[in-house]
Amino acid sequence: MKLVCRSQMIGDFAVIRCEGRIVAGEEAQSLRAQVEESLLETKKFVLQLAGVTYVDSGGLGAIVRLLGTLRAARGDLKLCGLSPFLQQVFEATNLKELFHTYSTESEAIAAFSQRPQASPQASRAARPKVICVDSSSDLLAYLSALLKQCSYEVYTAKYLSDAATLARSTHPRLAICGPTTQASASAFEKFRQADPQMQILLLPPDFHAAEASQAGSDLVGRIEALLIAQR
Image (cartoon, rainbow, N blue to C red):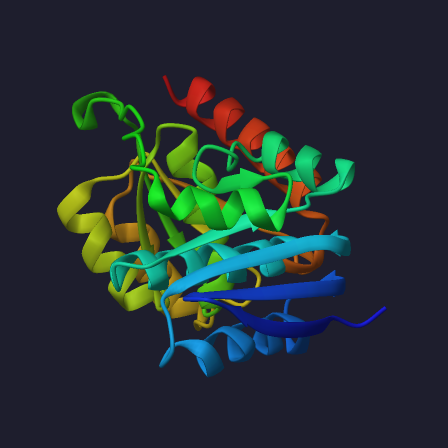
């Protein structure tokens, strides 16, 4: 079922009720468009997800980007009505701590009057550095949020040339190249030479469309294995 979003203003809050699948592409774009339509009226959003049956890594990345956009504008995005499937997705990807989730719309709206608690952060010096490269902003948002919740220090770039500059200056232990990374063989080789000690992990072509929790847990496992082997 394609994503259907219905928006309703309740006081100063925009409640967006979603039904169907939140996946990379048209569905993720329609969700962002629904939020943008209400931005002139409010920066306080509640996303009702009781009718959502599936989310892939690209769709979850789109929600992460919306969260970042609203918090940067001193607003917020709260989630409610998560099905057992979605609860498992957020727990498996360690993103439950990033989002504020509630059982009902009323609880989510009431939470806007509560002061948020700061989440503990790992010491930057102890966090392995990772660069993520892909042309998709949604996928980069998903990877960044996923890895930060696992205590990695994450840098993102849409182009290998920019990623090479980051690699030379930050000396990451690992670079993750997404399925839509656009580069010639020579550009990829220049990126590899930017820091010869850097491990490179290539994501499969269908990664952005994979079920978000499984894709996340598999990726974290592969990263941990690579970094252990690197020691």
